[in-house]
Image 1 (cartoon, helix red, strand yellow):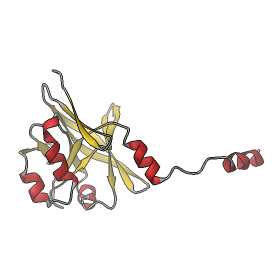
Image 2 (image 1 turned 90 degrees about the vertical axis):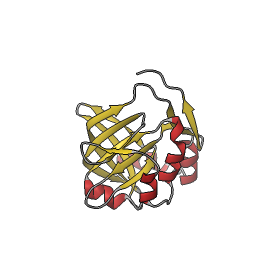
Image 3 (image 1 turned 60 degrees about the horizontal axis):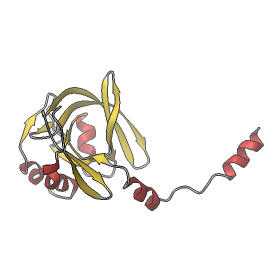
Amino acid sequence: MQLATLEMIRDLPAPVSRLDYRDAMAHMAAAVNIVTTDGPAGRAGFTATAVCSVSDEPPTLLVCLNRSASVHPVFTAHQSLCVNTLCDDQRALSNLFGGKTEMAERFAAANWTTAVTGAPLLEGAAVSFDCRISHSTSVGTHDILYCEVLAVRQRDAADALVYFGRNYHGLPGAAC
């Protein structure tokens, strides 16, 4: 039995290269989000497409955050965040939060309110999920933050902003 297992391992194809993986991921459309937090360690936010639903009981989503990102220590210190899903007309804000722009300048570019957890909630977002980070797991270069949703605010109708083929695309919305 062990010999058969060793032979199967030897017959596996070579691992997918980082470049091939990134090129393939460019063909996976994803909603564009600005993830925010605030508290004793400061106010921080970043643009993310690596966000998805985990469970509806309890309502939980996940956010992937690179451990080398400058915002990583702030998010892990606060243990709360708000996922703000962007509308088509918020592309410039996505670029601002996705770059090296100072935090104060990022937040000055939009209107914010405070969510239940204290995290900044984006006025005009398609939907905002106010969350408590319940636990995290490290995989490769990233932490996967499992976030229990404590409150949701959504617009009645909103266009969606998605990232696909290394470009932004707008999707027309319908009344919810």
